[in-house]
Image 1 (cartoon, rainbow, N blue to C red):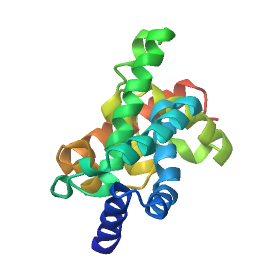
Image 2 (image 1 turned 180 degrees about the horizontal axis):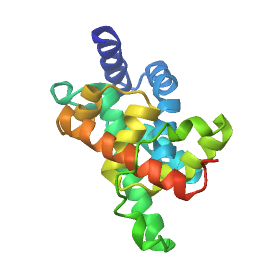
Image 3 (image 1 turned 45 degrees about the vertical axis):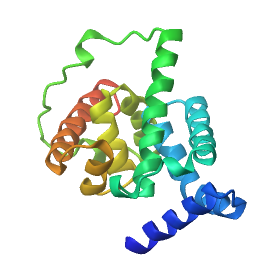
Length: 190
């Protein structure tokens, strides 16, 4: 992990100096991951595209804002993406009012009488998850996207979210329980 981090920092220094090749290399390394993260967080391709573009525009103009002692370059980029996605969602919610059923906020822990997800085909599961993940409250959605969808370690997610690994684990457990309830309500289980 130290080598990619030092290489990322080197690229960032190059970007700060106007090196186009350094920008292109960092863009190629992170664009897809940041887009997927924004897409999973927002459930909206337009927001994900805008956020991804804005992250790299900010990176070009403020590459010197990164502080190595505060975390990795990846954490820095995901943090910017996270904040911009939240802003995009707030702006979007002001434009369009989304009505959720009143019982979706407090989902009880479902009974664990089998693996709910085994009953789904891969495409059905993906479709159901695409609809369910964006409806989770921010703290839960973030850990699902980071740990389950982006396969980030608890330690890396904790660093990015500025909380403990235990908090990440707890939120992830709760988020998975909420997703199981939401998936069963969407009739994703045969």
